[in-house]
Length: 359
Image (cartoon, rainbow, N blue to C red; front, side):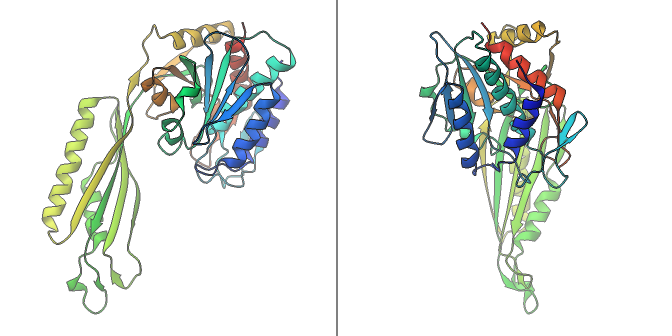
């Protein structure tokens, strides 16, 4: 039986285990111990992702969730505030995706202690999802037998279903200027930071249309205040559901670089672009979607289908032939210190996961 008090305790326990992207080892060890306690066969691939297998024959269902969190996510102090779990305001609460982990762990606890007959299943828990799905891109897919997956990594209640996700392109622009003493001979220098500022002001920002966004997420450059900075770097991204729009933004970025390069001929600008994950649409007859809507209906919940501007491990799974659908996990305000997790919503997510696994 799904236990509300246990759900709250599990969530509060695991969010207090620091697991920023790239530093998930303590979290991984805790999860391996918990999963083995449910009688699952648990392995880790060469990248450190966790894959657990239940007993039983036949094609399994894959439950997917990631173990890493974004910053500020160290020293999280969870607090129950009515029907929500929040942090002390100095960190995230870590619901993305430890709310998803909690829902899966509680469902497994329930079917184990009640000896509930269940379908065969696998659990894939990845590292470094928040750094452009790095863990999933390095996952050993030879360890997965599943052809359908439910990914617990969406914002909002569990009946929020992601039916489309964008293509995500990251880029870096490196700028080489010329150093000079800022007080003695600044006219001999070419400020890489000045060039970067010119470039940033000419690039688009924020939401470009209903399907497209553009963001400069990081700038760095210079060494000391009294030297004209010779080096600078801009790191950004753009994403869209529309491939033609992506091409247009890519062309605009390159044209802006050429324009700024022409204005500062003594500087050198170089750019690197990389597609981190690809767009997908979930068709209405998708088998994973049918499975999810049936489970929600059995709980009296109506599915709320919407596109997302974010990416999940589901983007990677779909490119590898696994029909994957992302559901909500009772989390709101992701990636901010105002993030909160709904306790009733978290209990609903655990019930939903249990229903998915019942025979």
